Length: 248
Image (tube, rainbow, N blue to C red; front, top):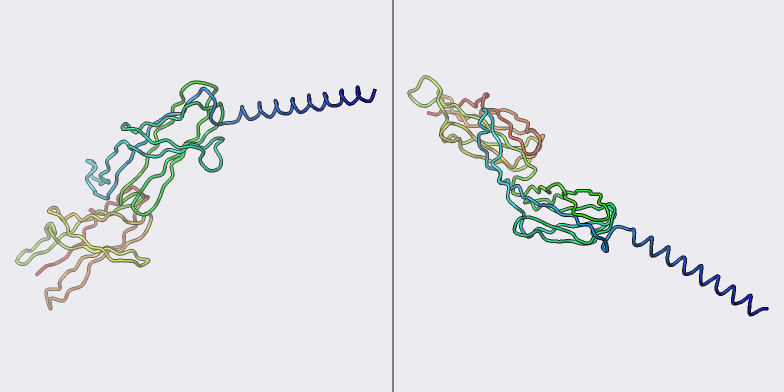
């Protein structure tokens, strides 16, 4: 009798353990990760911005950027959308990446941009079914020395010797400095009297000035103005407020 009870008890324990193992396996198999029939794929592009400023064709100015395919760029995937990355793949010659054999669920895809002085992470969340290829919106990375920076464009008018009116201040040196301190920078106005400054902090006030001479004693003073930059990626246009200098 005791052996019968013992055998029945052992069978019950074994059956319960087997059921628990089966449930555990079933639970694990439903989690995000490898082992399924779905795939996540997409493209990565680099927007190169080194700070060159050009006309936008509508009376304003913009940064001259170049969009190229990101070749050999690491793309990371996070199973479940939380925590450290679980796997990574590099993009091919077309900037294309793909993660195969995934189970149904939520995932996060991301890549890291390489600007001159900072790292920027672009993330995409995607929910996939049990099978099929799921396309992710392109990952756009901003790279270059002017990444996440702003710019200022202005103009110079100059009064030259033996002239009675102002004309384009060709070659006039213009200076700039952050009102909060930092290094002073300078450039020269082009053949249209236009000066350009890039790689500036966004939403920040700067002092812009040029040197002018006083005819009476040829004393050199400065003509200056304060300019606040726009949001990152934008150029503040002050060409309608020229710096007026005299040169003797």
